[in-house]
Amino acid sequence: MNCTVNKKTGYVLANLTNEYASSNSKGKCSYSTHKKIGIGYAVDPTNWKDNRFMYANKNYFLIFDKENLPERPARDDHISVGTYAVLKKLCDESGLLNCLVEAFGSDDANLILDLASYMLIEESAKFQHYPHWARKNILFSNGSISDSSISSFLNEDLSVSKINFFKDNWAARNLGDQKVYVCYDSTNVNSQAEGVFLVQKGYAKDDKTLNQVNSDYVVRQADGLPLTFMNFPGSVTDVTQAPEMIKFFSELGDDVAKNITMICDRGYISERNVKDFDDAGIDFLLMLRKDLSCGEELLKQYSSEIKKNENYLPEYDEFAMTVEGKLFDGKDEPLRNFILIWDHMLEAGHRTNFYSKLVSLKKELDNAINRKTKYSLEEIKKHFYYLNLEYEQNGTMKINKRGKGHSGETEEIPAFIIKSYQDNHERINEALSFCGYRILVSSCKTNGRECRIAYSKRNCVERVFTSLKSSLGMDVIGVYSDDSIHGKSLIWFVASIMYALISIRVSKQREKDRKNFTVPAVIRSLQEISADRNLNTSKYTRRYKLDKRQKNILAEFKINENDIDEIIDKV
Image (spheres, rainbow, N blue to C red):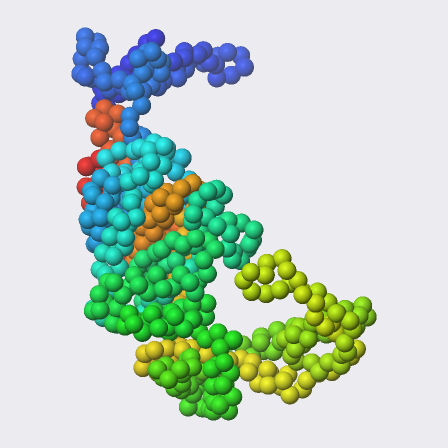
């Protein structure tokens, strides 16, 4: 095979084909064509005739020496750089890397960041694909590891004590010594693991038959930064999990706890939890449950005063007023601030919902009258509160005994059948008068407007859960031991911190361009900032200029093209 050299560039070209061609059908103006391919770089391009040595590239080995092809390098010839550059700077500036190193040591901390970066970039938590991904990206650690090594790492190296040490440091670092609102909520993650304590049937909204693990998060309201997390068995309710989270923040020290106001939904209200808040010196802002009698009493007393002009909040088109009262009965129960809120849109929804349930109840009664369905006296009084019933006794019925020691036992009680019914207008009108109201209760002395604004931003924790499940692969657990669940949950937590840090930095750009400055869109743009290996020198260099969007993104992190090139030079 004939080879030639370009004396200006030094590239050695091999002639693969030598074909005869003609310019017309009669064969006139005939000539030969050559198909050439570069196979290397000449050592001495000007003296190719006497010095045939060259630096061979992969084409040479594919054509001439397939048996002696070089081994595949640890990194691909084309690697992504942009996302690593941003995450490295964020982890350094936020103190995330230092907190991880203090808890786990340098090597394990860097691997944690690599695994979290994989979740963030690939939007997946399936680590069997990690080795392939690691070849195409710059890593925090010194090299890639296999998926089986990752399993061992999650199960054996990330102990609960180390995780707790990291959480303490990270939370204390980001709470500071100023007044801060934090939002607390929980989500559940499905799992098919068997014989694992954390995996139990619980109260899943989508499918109650599935086993799950409960994961609680606390998020700084001001910017949506995750502060800590905890795992609980899937069968444990929110109200039962709360004392452990309150204890966590109380153990950070009085100087930290006294500055915290924790915002929770109505599922976390209980007498014990409120007492724990008081004992820890942590303020709270909670939505009142409808079954607490104090709410109904407050509405009866103040509903006529709420909808006054001085209580109008124009930014929400609502009315709100603050009153004092006791949350629970008892001599030692302190006075709390109750924020009574009325919303005309909420009123319409409540009224529609109330009448829908009332119509369904009447249909049930019509069927019961036709079929002569038997009810206990307790069922009649409890389930048909808004109706006046005409009923009569009709024999007896068996029901299961209640209480401990009576499992499987039954007893006979009087049975009643319903003959007719009418609306109880007094009770219905009272229920309608309560439509449109919400009640917040707080232990801190703040006005209703501030509490309303603070509670309206509680969805910051929901946004963290959305990012975890939509962008970080937290739809299923995917591991099969308690230790591995704790380890993988730590990686998810670190990934959620990275996600939040990026979101915080590009928030101003996102206000102008919501399409291109979401976190997934930013990461896609950063992944396109790449470097290619020079086959002659084995060094990586950037082949393309940065486009306008990439420059705008990097500017938010105070990174420029020179910074990118410095990172590439160190690969």
